[in-house]
Image (cartoon, rainbow, N blue to C red; front, side):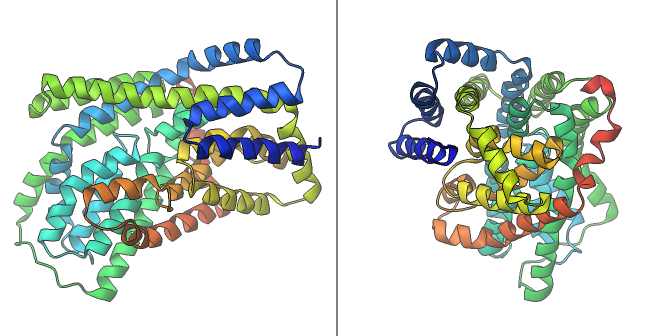
Length: 435
């Protein structure tokens, strides 16, 4: 059986398992078992337990539950309310005015969360009622919030970055720092969309009372806690004072201190945050373990090498290869969540990238844009379901509202291809002690 027949057979098995409702992690393990049993003479048991154990005991993974816990703690504080009050006095002069709080609020919360769902839920619960009360368009509120919340995947700390770094053996701190500039540029593009809407539509919205400079500065004090937390987490990694895991621990301590100062974290909500972090961490760790076993099985079958050689015969330029992968990830994003799409594909994609001479660190940021797009693509766009839970709108309305943000992300992907230094500039100046 050649590699094309093998690929088709394994894909059919995977879609059969996923379509039957089997957990993603167990589906990956099932495909790996079939691949080893039918197409190789390797021992299944020995390969499985050694791979699952090795992938589950990686030191790099310790940052994952800590960052998730930090986000769970902050989700239960009044941080989002403080963000809105601190930002709104400074946005009244921009076209679109307070609609920018969706983008800026998501950008700031992304820098202390790592999860797009947590970012969407936290900022959405705060901004949606306020914007609706002031007469802002529901269509724009829903669209900008669904799109901007995906910045939780790009701006560090990012859970998907950690997963990608573990799979491809890339430096987690370098990936984190690489996402800062593209994340800020993407946020600026989102704000540009809001400015264009405010300029062209000239919406009839309730004007906020004028505030003196003294009042604005006084309200801005509410931004100090999140600024300190961002500086602690990101600054400690960039300076080389802390690894990703140590920065995550500092973030948890900072989140607990912030919650204690605000008196917003009770014993019961602390337990809830621990349970939420444990459930999410276990889910991701199980998916990673299954993906590691599938990667090993694919290596035994020779599928990645055969596919990479086949792509080599097509003589695609690096640009055409990236465009092809872009369409692949967009299609996968219609049916899988972002982390699953990454772990499913990297075993096959990595040899292609190495053959084309594409930097895996840069590709990590590129694929994160694809994952962000997957969050708002129907029928399985995770942010669409979260947004539906926050509003009374249909999935069709939410998807339509988020469509312009999807196009902006596609533009960002092409900007990364045209200007790769956007992702590699900051990591090149990092201290070696943080690697």
